[in-house]
Length: 190
Picture 1 (spheres, rainbow, N blue to C red):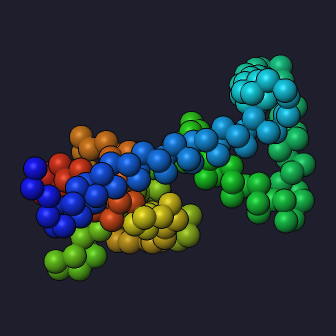
Picture 2: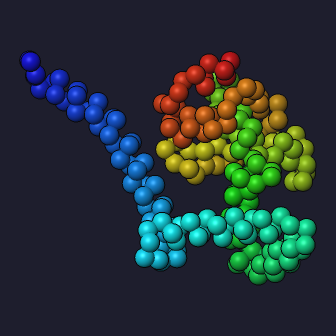
Picture 3: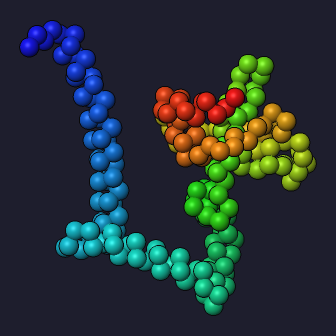
């Protein structure tokens, strides 16, 4: 076998491209599992995490019940009346609702015409901004590449085009990856 230094470097980077995402994903999942398991420290690994999942599921069930729903609404009403808690609680609740609630917000991928030859992918979070006395504007969320943060813009509704038959998760992955993931998303933009 003839190995020169360029081939070895190429093989190293090819291996790194496979190993690094795998190891980082495993590491992050391990941290999440260890954190959840440490919330209820028990001598049996994984039991604390199972109890946490069970408790959260039970709370979700209880909050959905006709008899207990008013109790949860009352507790939430108290939380909303506390000034600093109100901002933190409602912000986190709105963000969580955008992904897993009844009113998901990141399920309408769009392309926005920013200028003559510039378009940007995002998600429509509000179709009409009449509540701000701006009925011709839509609220659009643009995630940052390689980050889960982003910016919200109010843009003229006529510059917004809903992407039909496009998976929201794939669009989010495409944006967050800086446009380097699955290019089949781009084929559906035109």
